Length: 105
Image (cartoon, rainbow, N blue to C red):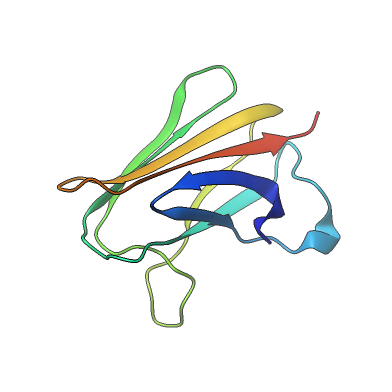
C-alpha cells in the first residue's frame, strides 16, 4: 500500500503493507520496494530517523521491486514515532528518489 509514504523523484518508493493493519506505529517492520524507468545499479539507500540520525545506509546491486525472484525488499524496524526520511539514488548516475514515512505516536 503506497499510502504510508509521501514519495517524489525519479525513483518511486513504495511501502509494502496491508492497509487493513492501519497506520504505522512503533515496533512495526517496514518493507520498501522501488520502481524506476531506467535500471542503472548500484543504488544507495539511506533512512534517517525522526531525530535526524542515519539509521540505515545500504548499497543494493539490484533494485528491490517486489517481483518474484527479484531482490528482497529493503527493511527496517520503526523505533520511534515521527517522520522517517528515505533517500535512494544511483551511485553512478543522476536518478534520485525521496520519501517521508509518518509513524504515529
